[in-house]
Image (cartoon, rainbow, N blue to C red; front, top):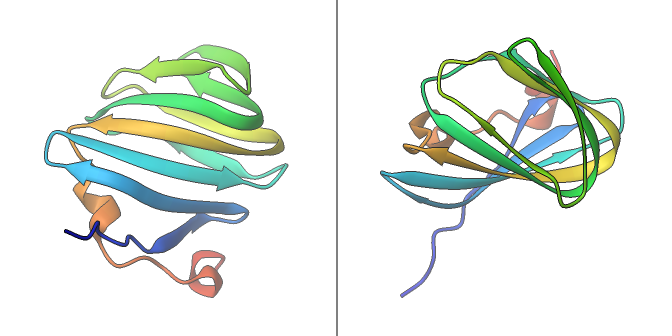
Length: 115
């Protein structure tokens, strides 16, 4: 049995996204950030947990601001506006429940994501 090979997507300048595993109930995703890159403020109905595998980030969750470093984690309830700014090159490992079906759509290319 072979595992799926998920393509890399480029959702924002300086950010790459790659699904690592998924099922209808759960999805695991790697986000790699260059220093200064941002995960724009947004919300979605999925519960999200984020684990900082490396680097440092300033996270915005609702009205709260959190400084997270490697080894830290945070849970974002569904429907809460959130985003982040990367302070030092790093990687986030995010879990979504249920799965983010929009992340399974064909990814944008690096050049089209930056326009």
